[in-house]
Image (cartoon, rainbow, N blue to C red; front, side, top):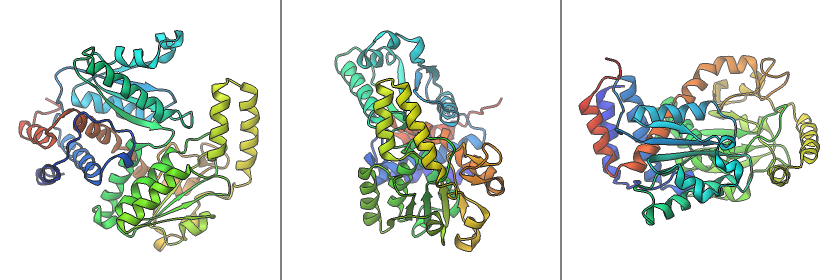
Length: 397
């Protein structure tokens, strides 16, 4: 990317005149259109500067705390990479090795990890109705600590995936779509099929499909959600998507077959998730530590999933898309038929064609997270980016 591109990003950011300093990033639909665009502009600029070999360091000291309450590869390393690139040291809170396992409260833990911290990144997607609530509880605790003078500064809280939304993933997806089609304006009217797909596992969060329908409808896209009967998303999130579609001039519809969703689609996003009612039941069983109940629920859900093994992204399905050449997207890891499982979300030949493109899609995530941190900590982000570009310190001497 040229310095001209970086300059345009900085100029457009300055023109937006947004103020996100001191704010958390917990749901994309909590943010204004200008704030979403600001996040995208900062991520684009940081990515372009990094590609040119420029150091992105903006902190001399400070800590970025990560709390992962579920397994993670891409998001964990993206958060670590973003923190390091900006000049922060990473501290990962292992709850099993902390006093949390001895009953330490969220309010106390939040303040203890926040003393010299600039950001707290949290992944908590296992418990429906609990993950986003936990993030807000941490945010309220550091608010109290800062107001009382316990903390010299109030660290930002960033959602690295919760039970409702996955902002870092969907913002990365948005930027990949922008790169693929050329601009945000070019997304208007493009049909994206967010479809359930078969998986030989159960209990996958709802946050990715919900994040996609909640964000892409803001850009005038024709968003089609498809899933078998019973695999509903949270109704309130669907209402958010419908409202965004009306406001942006886009469209949000729900259909009952993968084929119908794929027909004339410009983008397809086949991804497994657990039904909303199942996630509600699972949450109660996990809270009660009911191992037998969880085992029974897993058997029931896997049997239900097995009825829909034809919900697979195959060459035949891809031929239904616009010109047979829709962009395939996935948050990864995908369940690849004949590779990672016997039958899964996507046929191996389809995934092989798009494999490197899904890696490029994922490659936006460190810069999205870095953008969220920078915007949350600096009142003049355009000036900070301009200083980075003018300083032009080389990453490699």
